[in-house]
Image 1: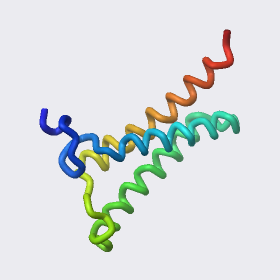
Image 2: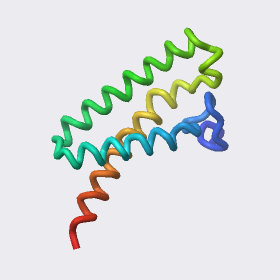
Image 3: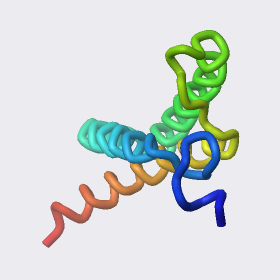
Length: 102
């Protein structure tokens, strides 16, 4: 289980940035919920954006190693961070849908 715990950026499934990813996607999910955006459409675009960002990070790690000091593990880039996107969006939509109901 060393791939899961303790958390080490670049070595484990999750890293400390997962918290920030989740917070960002909760915010985005809340905004999309408030704008009444189609959920499948929003989820597709957000996942595309998440994967595009992760691909960009791979290039940034090579171009600016002095700025990107702790490269992520491959599994973190392709699975964990996009998973935070899905969980953030679904969590915001679920919470906001049930917040209104008595």
